[in-house]
Image (cartoon, one colour):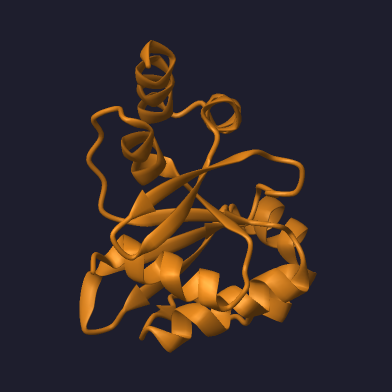
Length: 153
């Protein structure tokens, strides 16, 4: 089972509504894109964050910053505005290449997802339209390249 699949299985089994975004989402939609970390978005609720935290801890991932899901939920605006935190990072202490970013500046509520079936089961990916919109707001050069690749699909 791939690292991506482990994450998605853990979130699914915890009942967390999520969608893969970032480079993995671009690749799962069919555009060529390399990436190392897995980026996900959640419905912005304390329950989603605590469920994701427990699921990721359950597969051996720990948060890079010493904050809990409840703190991230309570102080999201302060973290984003005053500390420039856009993602809550989890990593595997035994394999630092295994990393997950929970994007805290984006809410999955009301967004569309697409199911991609992998050997371990279904993976939820943000729809192409919503992914393009998300990347356009970011404005980073890599995101602009991703938009061009997604629009060619």
